[in-house]
Length: 313
Ligand SMILES: Nc1nc2c(ncn2[C@@H]2O[C@H](COP(=O)(O)OP(=O)(O)OP(=O)(O)O)[C@@H](O)[C@H]2O)c(=O)[nH]1
Ligand SMILES: [Mg+2]
Image (cartoon, rainbow, N blue to C red):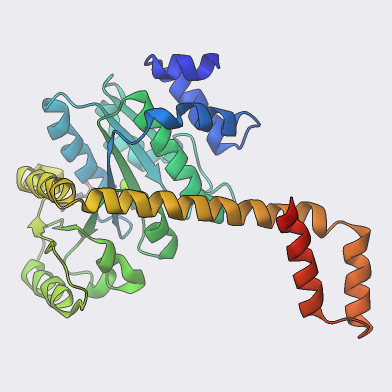
């Protein structure tokens, strides 16, 4: 495929078009993904999540600048599971990373739901792979919020940075929805505000409560992203975590688990699609429903039969 060839040769236009194909579920999307797949698995993938307005984009901007100085090429996927916007329409992200958009070693893409929350994690994962195949050294997934869908999205990353802010009252911002469990590094951003010590203690306490046997104790770093304070130390902590992942073989484990989860999710999706498109629309299915309704059959028997038929293909 020409598009794939161009993408692999470093054409940013081809990368943009491939991302659109995946995002819009064009017919050639699967062929593109198949073709680029062998070239994936090289980039380091960093997830950044936290409450709306925590300073994720400002922090991302500063972190990226550090990696650019090291000569790295960086892809950024900004995902907003609450917004229908896509293709770069999240103005705030754009504004705060404005000068990055002009840098030829950076590629930024925003993604929204377009009504399909379920598929957003999968699409994010595909976009990350496209950037990976394109030759990015680092791909950052920035996602807004602290709910389950954000957790699912950052699970596409190798390591995850959770950004918290002091003095929000509801200090347990992160503890909900398992965000704490996915945090490999914590940033207390807006450290120019009151309440850092309190939040720090709370995070430490939650980490102490974690009953899992952790080989890595997530560090907590204070930052003032808007003033570029504390970013060096944060980047150091992120690098240390990645080194830990590599040295402990945890990286291989995480990636294998991810591959497995991805395949399972794709199988489930295909089965679901087949049921929705083929089974549900068939006369036979309508007859079966009627038979159950008349108590001539029971739903359990119907489900077994449908499943047997679907799995036969
Ligand atoms: N006082 C202070 N303000 C900050 C700091 N970091 C970011 N901000 C400001 O906080 C606001 C939100 O920053 P963003 O970087 O857009 O936050 P975000 O988490 O990406 O926001 P969403 O993507 O909308 O969830 C902006 O006005 C920033 O300038 C900080 O360390 N201290
Ligand atoms: Mg943002």
